[in-house]
Amino acid sequence: MARGQRDARDPAIERAHFDALVTAKGVLYWADRTPAGRRRQAIRAEALATRTGAAADDRILEIGCGTGEYSRRLAGLTPATLVSVDVAPAAAAQAHRATGSAACVAAADVERLPFAAATFAAVLGNAVLHHLRLDRALPELMRVLRPGGRFCFAEPNLLNPHVFVEKKVPWVARRLDDSPGETAFTRWGLRRDLEAAGLVEITIRPFDFLYPLVPGALVPAVERIGRVLERAPLVREIAGSLLISARKDSGPAGR
Image (cartoon, rainbow, N blue to C red; front, side, top):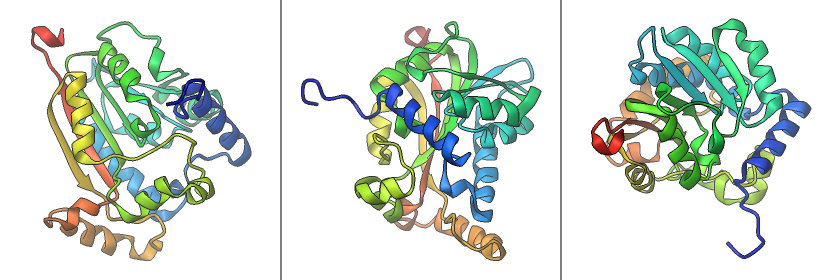
């Protein structure tokens, strides 16, 4: 980055973008507004909640909660106490209204979380890591995650044709309300970042062939076909998303 050039993933830029988007449209992601998009929410929330393995006396942290669509679902899928944060105060306020007492919601910068070390049994989120400066955010997430805690995320797959165009063609990104600095991941590149952060037992699986614009009547059939494609060698590599599960080392280096 050239001297004086501001990182487009700076939390202040992300905050301004999403505050403006919520204020103007009341929603953050076009893909959440369709029948197929809502089904994708349900699938992802269940996958993430299941992978936390959290118990009733645990606390789990959802980052990038947006306006609370996933927060509502996650709160109903885990016995743990859900704490949800978003960098954009307007989004966090809407998430608070959406979840009521089901989750503890706050506006917070993932690079400077207002929690003590080793507070959470799991950290999770949907489509949020690709907005972050991982070299700053991952150490902070590791700080608040207890030894042995779970790290569970769903993120866009750069090898998917739609995702590639959306992230690499600026006018498409603007049309779809992408923030200025967001990107997408490959499995191998993301694995390197997670290993460097100290995570172990890392699995990154391509999943999700349910395109958000699939008509509602066709969603069950496309979902069934997608489950087959997720198991097909090579074809699965162009799935829309990556499902990530890992653990913070509980050994001496992870304490």
